Length: 139
Image (cartoon, rainbow, N blue to C red; front, top):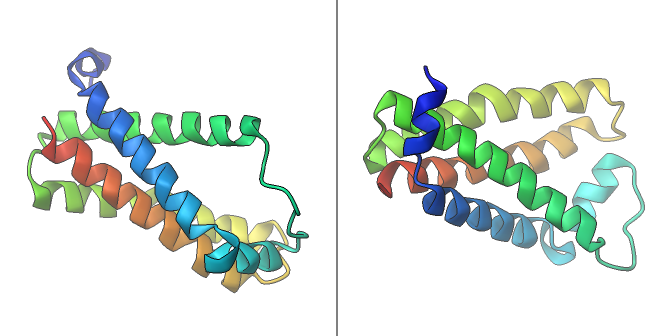
């Protein structure tokens, strides 16, 4: 693996994948969908106002970093098809994000660790699946 291939990454695809993941998050964590349940599982109070722009911009930046890393892996592995993108998204989603969500759920003393995991791990997995497909197919 080489840093040289970062120049070959399709940054427009990374940007679109980032936005797609953020839109998924906006829907997933909307209060009527899973937002309230996520807060309960975390032991937090649901805020009355939406999060500040700082949190939204930070989330976008972090999604961009993960999408860029996934695109870099796609480029290095020759991932170019829908099937390749699905496999890449599942590998990254399960191999990293789901594992990290499980460790977080266990060791951060969440009041409802299984509920927290069942809300957050699928979101990360689905987000990276979407990212894997976009950055693999869009070349």
